[in-house]
Length: 516
Image (cartoon, rainbow, N blue to C red; front, top):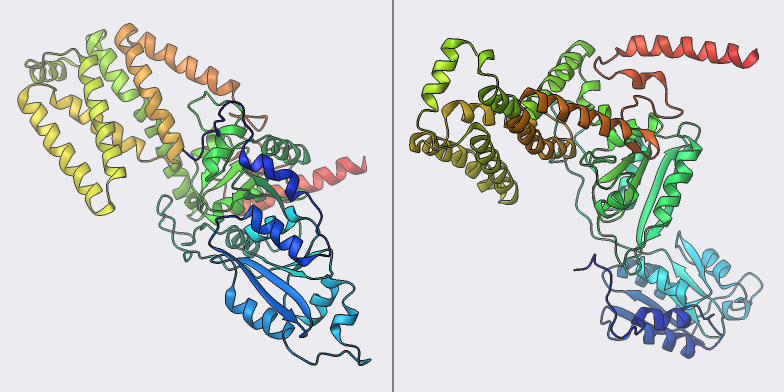
């Protein structure tokens, strides 16, 4: 597996470790020697091209690039053709070969290439080649020049599938780091938006950008997240899930402490709230830290609708959070220990439906919940055309057949269906997974201790959540350090006109306090 640490036999060094010393060597004035060093490192790499030519008809040179990563058309048009022309002279009649003292400066002045970098070691040449740049080596020059002529294949910007909405922007992040950063820059046009680059992965050298707004995000949080990222030691980082699992504060907690999103508007809103966004090359999912439990229950669409509508939807969301977590447990506890809580007519109906069921309420609920989870996972993994059909048909057929066979009761089918519908209301998939995991221990406690077990389970969950931290910020806190008061909207979405008025009042108070 690519994400597992590389195994060694007999404590032998890895091949890459043998070549690290070679890569740190400086380039020399001998062109052939420099080319042989790079060819040795890229041995058996058919996609690495070494194009030899003569500059100004009398100077040997080699341009190196990786086929598929570099823009071959621009290399031919903007590099090879100009450098291979005859009769180049400057204003004093001196040919360029005689004035080739500072190679980087000469390239910047003579070639129509926007990005030009110095490459003084073999390692720098390898790094630029891996980024898709072309490296130009000239005989008699002790340094090379990397030309920013990369051309990566990428898909078009599309609407995110996992975070769709009725109102709001329809574009989502893609697998290109540059494109994703441009989506953030297009919305935040201030130079205070910072993006610091970090390379992760021993072999992949995956480029990661830490984005924040200077003066809004707390400097301590920025320093902490940079420190955690630099401690990542993996052979490869293929997705932000690798980073999320390592930098979170509590790896054994079922609750997510990092928000992942495909929506640029969610990332921008998080930046404006003082959070930090981690963008990785090669994945459309970006990470947001720190987060609270309340932010996981909020949808971007809450701020695009009118405040009254958003508040009602948010309250409904919290109500169904309790339904998703507690409904099967309450059903088990009441039927097993507290039948006196059920009205007599309803109790007789439930008893009649359970007359043929051979299992107790706990086993019945456990079987149905496991079957429902299996159907949900099958619907997700199957192709889109067949997934929905399998989920719906499977639930109807299995549910009806189970009731007719006397394996489960009809009320249990209703309880499981309501629980599944409630779990679909969460805007964040990771939060829904956490509640799905906690539903099973809550059912065990309800089957063992009744309503007392449910209360005990709730106390344990709340105690655990109170002890959690996300980048050092309390998980149940509604504030992010340095964030404004507009983060206080937990149950009620504050109208924008009121938020602006409160902001001006708080600004005056802070100015008055500063004067005093």
